[in-house]
Length: 158
Image (spheres, helix red, strand yellow):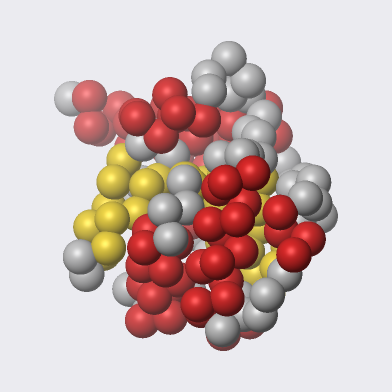
């Protein structure tokens, strides 16, 4: 999956144009921060408010994914809230992040790293928050991510 794929840029553009409040997390955020490992899905932390859910539903309609009323009410649970989007990519939507319970969505968004991808601003979870999350999730791939992200963070600090 290429970060500059036109379909992904259009996806993020539609989210932004519809005022969806989100942060990219997971493997794609790990790649953004400099550890280039394969990932077949997009993980997105969605601010869980009724208005934001309506905005997400509107963005999906504009993107041609269809109109999904359940987006406004369904629980978003990691691994269970997967929706097929552009080019067969799976979008996993989360409404909370393990290991970051002490922070609000707003706090994490304010500290997020913002990528300018062809003029589209995409928030990625801050490397420190990403490391915290991956330490708590603690799957084998997360353990590898933590090691590599900590190396990257150390290089950045030097």
